View 1 (tube, rainbow, N blue to C red):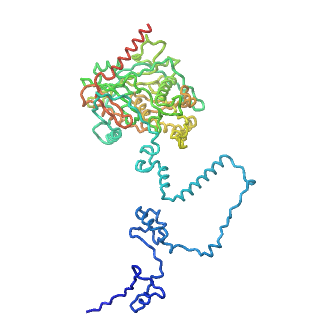
View 2: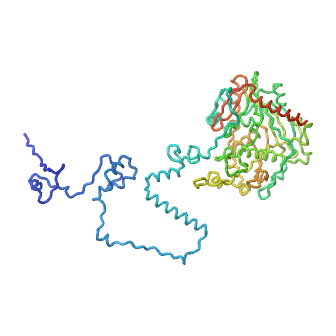
View 3: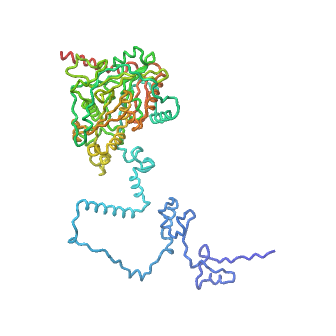
Length: 608
């Protein structure tokens, strides 16, 4: 049997743990036996620690440096509970005698007001800004890199941190710092209680589906029409004036008001030619080029709109627009990041509201299409088989129809779909040629300078003025940059114009760049430049696929063919990228027309 030697345990009646060995202590005399171990840790300092603490770095002797190094809150609270002065033994100690003889010497050069040089106001502002940055940097260092103030300021610089600000800088679309600039639009028509929703389409998914259908053989064909036939030509066309090719921003041409021309925006069911073609069975789907191009490019739209679709018992479809709607008015900066807003305190006259801008853009477009033609010499005018179907010579009152040729065309889309569309051409490219053209006008929109907000920061409109390109400065040297900006801000409008030119079979598309004489004058304009584009090449430039256009209209036709006969309203949600199809009573929107006709008859009787 082996002997087990009991180790020495020094008694310590004062506290728990081994006693301290001091000279003259009874415990020290007791520990002087042969089995008493030497106290080798007696002179070493002791630092308290917690098992839950995490080491920030190797050989981290100070607990004070661990508080802001990304530690969890539990360890931080534990360290603060024990105090930051526990490890004073490990701190660097300065000799008291050396400290008493230390003195800080200022070696900076003294400045005097007599030798100070003159500073320009710009240099003084830069110096003041540098001084402010230094002061802010000192305050930030005093607050600490992990303080709540620093985290709050960083969140504000990113655009509204937290869970609601978005993971990549908050920003405009995720409820960040620009939430006050969001535009809440109203629906183009009020949904009545007796309307029944039958379909709902997501425009984002619709765009992806059309792209997939174009890449592979999907349920909707993306092929071009197998056959295109010209049924009728109506109206006349004037010849384009070549002098407008030489217009520059240094020699602009004032835009004239055409007051003796009549413009017609007749809907499908009010067109007598389309009515005769439907009776003669020339097709089973009827619409105008404005409506057809709108449906083909509707995935780019942002503003609310609505269309009326009537399905007859025979299966014929008529795509219509409502009377007195905003459908025929052009939009301005519809797809821009900061579209025009109706609530602008710095625009007391209201010339930059969406409604006023739409009316201004429409008038500019109409005047431009007639001014660039040779109207004085009628010998160059080409008249077609039938006159303008909407012009009444007996009720002209000194007016004449505008130079427009209505080209009624039939497109064979397959699957027994015969689409008849009324398209428009605006002029001839040359005198004795068969090249036809369409004309459109882009107008420069410059928001009025706005004042600062309540917190002293510039508003979003004031900040966007610095990023805008001035047409008068860049239209001659950087026309591509100007057009690229318009493609971003007016993507839907340019896509519609391109689709209309393709439907009409135009050889050229003329685009004019028109600007206000002064930013606050919405009535006087000037033409800064003009440019010819081939419609197919321009469609490629703006990433508009002709196959996707035809696939879109095929999808709408197939969608309506599976529903019973009746009247339907297709409308876009004002604030979401959604299309909704409603089944409405047959007399919807007809009461308004009858009331307007009665008011007109009463007015005529009172005049008599």
